[in-house]
Image 1 (tube, one colour):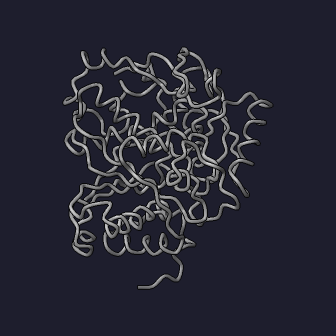
Image 2 (spheres, rainbow, N blue to C red):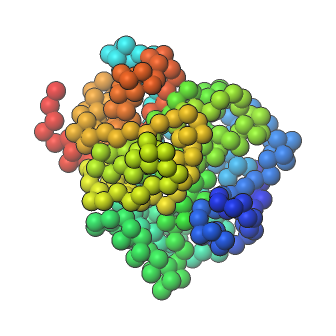
Length: 372
């Protein structure tokens, strides 16, 4: 198994760049670079139906991931997370075909493990000796673990206020100490790791697509990566038909994408005085806002905001009804689902996947004293 990575491409103007060196944003436009693959070769040389025989982690999709030499893969067993039907909630809500993708079972307890594994593995392959990044906590935890696994240094800037402040610190550290900056979507490969959630989901559904995906949106890498991955699967002929509707859920106290979506804008204005108990949703100015908004509109999706109180109540509901201890970001998707069913945006029998992006064990303070 080896990567079929061919080049990098600017998501604004389409300019192409070589993938054999460490890269950040596009030199031409200063925006997100996408990793591109030789899809005709993959279509000719890779048997989709043999992928299930491989080790059940994200690297089973190696041809569509960026690492050329398998010896450079830094892994803690990320990926291969379960897709579970929520049968008790289906009965309670009077719905059917409701699933959760349980990303809280990844190493370090969140979906961040996928993106960090891909980015650090490719960075190692291209000569990086250490990494820096801003983080609300989950990405930093993953980066620390994977850098330790690889024997590389890490200088991580945790948020004490706004993610943008930590981001500026990461840029300074990268320049001063010669570390590579892994800031969200300011390098090409974290999105590739997140893309594997979509590839895996397609396989788990027997290479069919669900009708809707509800995803908690902060920086947006999950939505952006999966949308990119589904388009690649379509081009390969591995899936057919319509893509699932991407539905972004944000917090009422930080909803720049929701506002931009409903105002018909292609980019989002920074959200002032962002507040929410869900650390992963406290991203007032996502760098790749334009890609997130495109994915939502391209698939006929929508965006909505939910309250912190409803998120915490949904954490309790998922735990007591299904035994899933979700983070508030993941629980927000259940709140969004129930609202969209009530409003008629989703049918009661529509095949829908909620993404729980992390374990509730990271938020024990939120459920102290909750009773039902």
